[in-house]
Image (cartoon, rainbow, N blue to C red):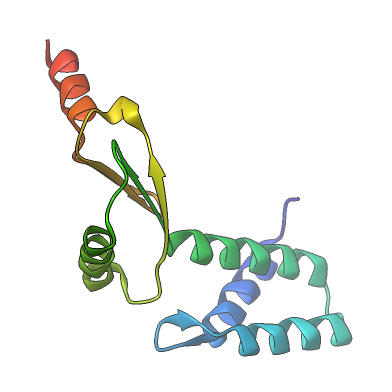
Length: 130
């Protein structure tokens, strides 16, 4: 659905109002959406669509996927998440996966950022270098 520039700008402003200390506040978001649906301003469907997109992107930014060749113990998991929390903030949602194809090391994805410290990733980079 294509939305107008005015609707996109309005959605960005409303999304900014829904944040507390740089983090999305669910209660504020619910209040904004309910008031928007009640008042039904011009192009409110476009505003809701843009607001939904911004919310989805914010949630994906806090999602962490950690892949390893073997199962990680709890101490290692906590150390990895603690290191990422320093850079990305404390409210990260971590998901752990075992991928034997990595051969060793870790591949960590936070939102759109990928940190590949796996043996397979190094071999792939070496292969591409030749």
